[in-house]
Image (tube, rainbow, N blue to C red; front, side):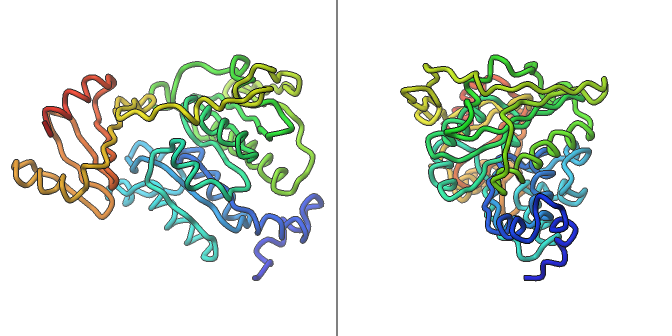
Length: 334
């Protein structure tokens, strides 16, 4: 392997050739391939990480292009799944990178199946329920993970290392955040970059087994504020994830057929019995027009755009109430 491409990184006193060799042997999971995920994936590939697993349940839309750096107009016009387009662009950056891509919803089953041999998990999600699931899995399996959040011009980041730091669950009541998402109140690119810079800095330290302070960092780029505080003493003995008797409740939560996508006016419906072949035959039989590519089928029903992926997962746009989605699915399939 030609290490010349990493020469400037190797010159850095805290990395060197030995550190670069460590990085090349790491396998990192990125959950979410939106603004944070695309930045993180590109950074990891350019840094020299040997293997990445990327997962996202969505496809590319024009509104993504303002901040999701791996995608192009053609990707949006083709309704490409985010992980598929990301893989293609990452391979163009570095041909020897090993990429495992999943067009999927992250639940306990996904993590148990695909994250057992991971060295590090990077959070690029947009909701606290998935982060709690990541937290439970990470602490149950002793895998470090790094939280990142961004909205408007604000950023927040913290690294969690099982056996060393209190977990995300202990910290949640103290995280400076508001119940908003990029899809409801917007986001600017510099805030994304700030968040991922902090995440990548801690990712490098974890991969190199360097000393990592136990602290959360947050700020507002527009206002020019930047703060951090330590949380090493925030562990709760009763914490269900890292306490004296952990139960990992989010790993054992019942899976739901219907789930609301944060800030998207979209309901996700899951039914593995509805294959793409069955759906396509149904649409033809009922004279419902549709468009398709190798990854999805798109059609409209009762004024709602529905996108179906392999495995029986559908996104029903223009809805926020799971009960309304249930009614529509019953109308559609009986």
